[in-house]
Length: 115
Image (cartoon, rainbow, N blue to C red; front, side, top):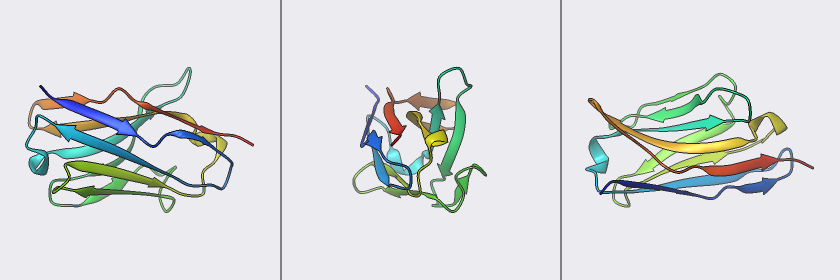
């Protein structure tokens, strides 16, 4: 059974930082590209950051130079370090794993940026 379990969300003030984690089980983690998506109320789900099996990264323009995605294959975990957070970053953040035609989603973790 495949599971992606996110953690680390919460309430943070503008300008603050959070680190999200996503622990994977039931997959050969090292071969999967890992992605973070987010969805705010009334908006479409959007891709935030990607890290390939080889460690290459890509970011949405809106988070470039503020967010950092990383992975630890020994721990089957992907991280999203979020810095200089803005109210517009408030959303449910989802972990996603993809390999060939296989893809899996986590349940999401809420991030709220507010003073």
